[in-house]
Amino acid sequence: MKRVSKGAHPSVSEPGADILPRFAEAFLEMLAVERGASQRTVESYRRDLMAFGGFTSKTHGDSSAATTEEVRAFMASMGSTGLAPTTASRRLSALRQYFAFLVADGIRSDDPTANIESPRRGRPLPKVLAEQDVEALLNQAREVQGPRGVRIVALVELLYATGLRVSELVGLPVGALARDRSIVTVRGKGGKERMVPLSLPAQEAIEAWLSVRMEFTAEGKDSPWLFPSKSSKNGHLTRAMFARLLKELAIDSGLSPTAVSPHVLRHAFASHLLAHDADLRSVQQMLGHADISTTQIYTHVLDERLKSLVRNYHPLADGPVAGVVG
Image (tube, rainbow, N blue to C red; front, side):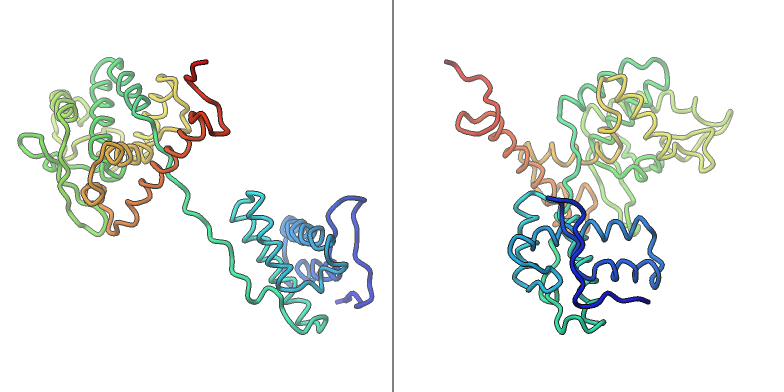
């Protein structure tokens, strides 16, 4: 493969644009020819290297000779401009491979990225519905006529009252309910059982559902499942079927269908409990989390909501001010 000589000049795309580092074309050619990288991958590497070349051109004439301090400054600049950690990690990966190429070809004797740590990728916060949004869903569910309406009310009430995983919800056997309907016993991940108390509205919704449930079973036959389905191979309502019903309910409620899912209602259950001063350990047990650190993500959701409240409504904040009397 033809290599670029050490005396080659850097390639500049157009005035004011980012600069492609020296020897980058040889590196990109190697990716395509020797590693079989697609054109899309090569262009992604090209953009990342140009971003680095543009940054170092302000302080260094040759980014291929950049120091560890310059690489570290480049990474810090991405953090200060709010660039996503995933993008910063991808760019660092491109630089690692580029400088490894230079070392392997004898162009450099050291790798300036060797002691650079990858940016930490923050755990994404779960989407959460506001309490009034859940109420809107329930109100709309109560408008649905007939046994299907009774079923969707029971599903939403039960999910919001327990925070069950959708697979746990649709796969509940009738026997999971206590005789007085006050508790549901759930078999979660790893076969571990947990008991979750039911709210009074959920108990009432379940009682109403049990009175019409047989209409969803095969004629003359009962079903072991709490939410049976004639059209389902496994005999009970599927995750996809419930998700579709929930999307339809969201649209009819005036909510975005992309903002509503069974998992979002599970998140709403946990966040709303914590917002009303529920004990974190109790919420962990009801959700079936093996590690409390998983449950703690919901405290971060509340923190973000409080920060947003201050930003938007505090009279000394930069955001919009509401309710200020002149």
